[in-house]
Image (cartoon, rainbow, N blue to C red; front, side, top):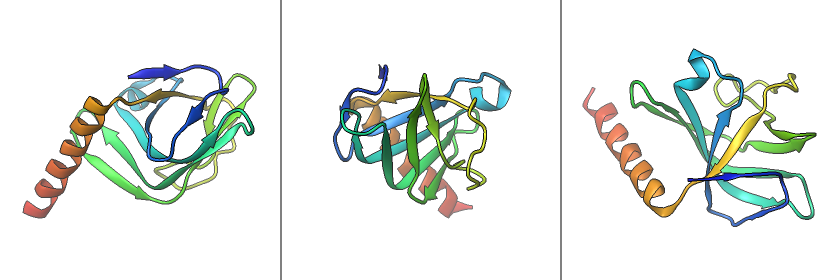
Length: 126
């Protein structure tokens, strides 16, 4: 996993990125947000859009929730912000709720897709 520094980089469509909130507390430590890039070009713009499918990964339970909505992430001063909360679907009004971006490599993507499949099978068994 590669941490993306600054905003002057390009991400290809279909790239998996992981968002981790900078504010560390019990709640943020136990979950990550994963999205698939639809559009991001940090050279011409300081914001990007995720494809319609994004995921919330709860590390303790292993549960993965699929979020079905386009999300925008934008650079502001010294970090990225997700403009809409993935869980509550409310637009974020706090400018101190920054996230760090990580680009996932092929091995991590394959492992994550396996977790998604496992999670769907377990949900169907319930």
